[in-house]
Length: 111
Length: 112
Image (cartoon, rainbow over all chains, first blue to last red):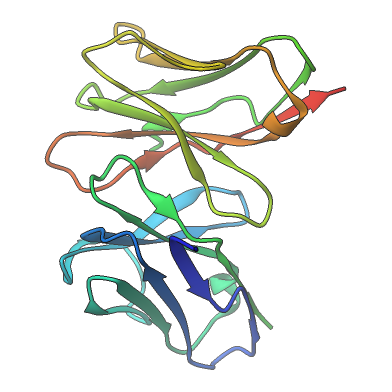
């Protein structure tokens, strides 16, 4: 039974489009995260939500907007996609900040 | 400014030998350190951690050593197995902060 799931796994789209990536965790964790892994393989935190409240919002363009309808879900919506948005996006959740459980990743390709 | 550094992008080790992965950090406020393992096309998975009040933590074949004065930690894998081939990320956190600071990762290749 998948602990942290993301959909879709692959996303190919044109520049300028709007897309969403969904994340769900069934671990009962209070905190969820979105990370971006860029071409250099760095994992960079984008957002973190604790009990549906935004607690981390790193320097991310306004085109990226997280939505947390409940504690088990943290979706990422991206407006006006750009070439530089191409990356692998990981969702994670944790009870404590230290041990985070990651989803399988969503590979976004913007053409 | 990278607060957590893994200076070796890759490491190749013979099966059965010891693998040593290194990590350096610059922020003395970090009080908890973790190692994650990542296979291709999967998310990172937690491997082992260590609190700053300890200098060693062992879990089976995996041991993490922390040298606070040198701001250095290392992950030892003994004996190395083919299934250990993966990218290993070092990460650090500090109390009252909700985020992990990640290193760039080291790709470990175990040769048969």
